Amino acid sequence: MSNVDFDIGIIGGGPAGTATASYLARAGLKCVIFERELFPRPHVGESLVPAATRVFKEIGFLDTLEKAGFPKKYGAAWTSADRAPVYAMQFEGLSADCHVDIRFEEREQAGVDRNYTFHVDRAKFDLMLLQHAHQLGAEVYEGVRVRGVDLSDPTQPAVHFKLGQQDIRTRVRMVIDASGRHTLLGNQLKLKVLDPVFNQYALHTWFEGYDRTRLSHGRGQPEYIFIHFLPLTNTWVWQIPITETVTSIGVVTQKANFAKSRQDREQFFWECLQSRPELYEGLRAAQQVTPLKEEGDYSYAMREICGDGFALVGDAARFVDPIFSSGVSIALNSGRLISHDILAAAEHGDFRHDRFRTFETLMRRGTRNWYHFINLYYRLNVLFTAFVQDPRHRIDVLKLLQGDMYDEDEPAVLTEMRRIVREVERNDQHIWHKYLGSLTSSAFSEVF
Image 1 (tube, rainbow, N blue to C red):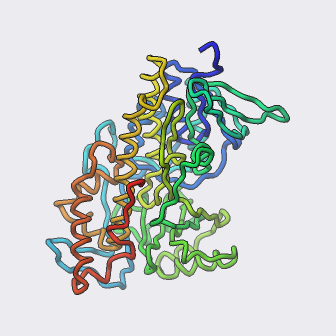
Image 2: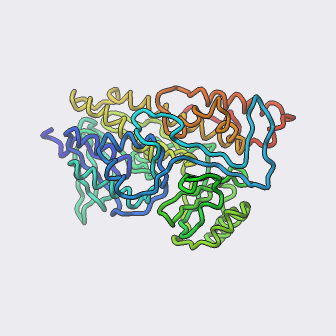
Image 3: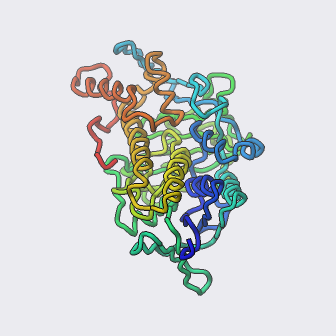
């Protein structure tokens, strides 16, 4: 330890970095977080899944989160246009509808002691998490841009950053890349692989005064996350409560549909919403309170997520399409999983790659399951609602939606979804065939 400045150097102060730091600082390791921005700062990804609750409890953050007054999220709902045909095409008992919802309380979840999670203002939420890690003992350097990591001696990696006009090298026993979609180590080590299937873009903004009951079919549903299907290929809208009166709205579409100029994007955003008149009219009656922002080229994986003296966590390791709000949960749980291996490595004084095989296996499995779930969701398109409705599959689907992705190589419901999709694909006369999305069920790559 005498030759290093800290045990663990963490690049990035978002949920992945702060969760990792919180676990390690609570256990007595000396950690430092390098964050390029000054918090609070806006960030997309406002809706959580229940798997995050376990992490909040373990790092002692849940009471703080409860007191913050963020909207509680009890479930999820999917809608398609009421004027479209209701799909009552029986296929082994499955049928799809124009409005389907699910509540988290329908399934007990290990480590989770309440029937809700939260929607959060990420600027406020991320700042709270960063402050919590600091209170637990982690050093925090904000406004510090890491320029690179020297891994030539993996027993003492060096983090390079600039402080004013001064170049600084901080030696640590291990580096954690939690830099989000900047993927500092992923880019430095040329590990990044762009997703050949999901080339989605998002346009998003906040509205004040939108009436969230307009597309709600039940009591309490205005506080759900809503996914609104649009009659464009692989295009959908998220609806997420931020406060009692502010709602986040985002249009996610394929890159091929994405307008080139900013003016065209604004027009495209509203034209997409016009395809769902009830939603469009409600948003036109509300006040847009933030500029329209965009997120693009955001689905990718890494050839490696750990090695001698380093590991990648959260979005720095993998980012998948945000359809099921998996981003923050994956970030937090990657911090949970890597911290277990780091503590064991620290005990033995050995931070070589082999020490992180458990983390690597569980993270690969979890993100692969998310990826396959999302892939099949897009292929099923509106027919996905059939699986939510069907009592044979409902709880298995809910398990995935809760974020329990790490304990099975492939959950049975994914196998069943794939089987049905392939059967429909092979028969172009099947009554469901024309309702399938444009992705194919074979559009998988082992790296993902």
